[in-house]
Length: 496
Image 1 (cartoon, rainbow, N blue to C red):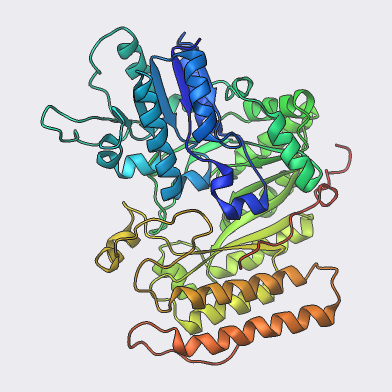
Image 2: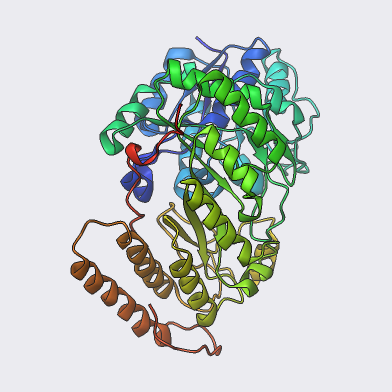
């Protein structure tokens, strides 16, 4: 029996792209919320819908625990939950309906519900928590469990007696960094281990060293932390790594931080703390090219970093400037070189379709990828999320479809330079070319396929343009991602 039943709405089998990749990670944002409740003396259970079918298994958890409160608390540290996918929104609403039928009070927290509190309140939820909500969740649950009315707390949205949602404010929780580790003991890690071992031959799990991002890229939505940035102590992060390595048999870690290595002094201390504990495990992070100083790259390597994904977005400086990226493309070239010299793989996040990007700018991106030869790329299409400058710029162009159904949707929802089919063709061709750089397939077979894909791009360019804009049509040269990295390629530093 538990007073609170925590869950989330992301279900891997409902997302075909991620199911093909088979890289499931535990909902640590949900598990941090569980830690906050436990630290306050509230009993809590967790239904993890990542690999468990929410439509058939959630009811059993309701019967088992008879919770007074059900909280759909999304994982704020997983980019998939930040994308506000409609398939997962539907799961949340189904969970709310089942919970209410069981007599429970229902709370929701996440990027989508923060952006659209009225929709969630109209679809079965009693309360929406916005922002950094662990402390707000504790305060709300304490009051409700004592039979009191909901307190006036920052971040709480509910319907008034006229059926109108209260004013939305974001809760702040700078004390998050002082929470103990996420409550992984409340879920079963074995299905994750089995999925990873079967698909990739090793077990990877996730953790975070920080929350938030202070940079102001104008397409990036920040409904949870705004521009706040909270950093855990290097010693606490290293200690958690040690526990995962020695107690959970973890062989690889993904740091889900929005931006890793923001503080170069912290990175140095982190490397020292990891080394002192013999806690080194190969890990990958997301960061920015202009943070990859020689010193930082060195310390990342010492700590065990095997892969850095850089937010490159575009090879065109003009597009980067339109995005308010605050990044010189030359810094990406330097970062790529430094990572390669250190033996750290470099991946590029790329984005197609941003306003101001025509065929010449796309060609710049393609040439940039070819010249710098990243180890991997991930391509997305510009996605206007509420609360961003980008969304404001294109809001008048948006039709009835405002969200992707799942992460494989990848459709253009505003009046970009080209139609969706063209961007998909460029994605497929560029992915195939980058994949070929480390493929064991016969070069002649690869060359023929890649040439065919680029011919398709050339054919579509002239017939896929939107509006009257004209672009140079010089011919040039995804859906499947690049092959996943084997554990043998994620080598530990010597002496680890």
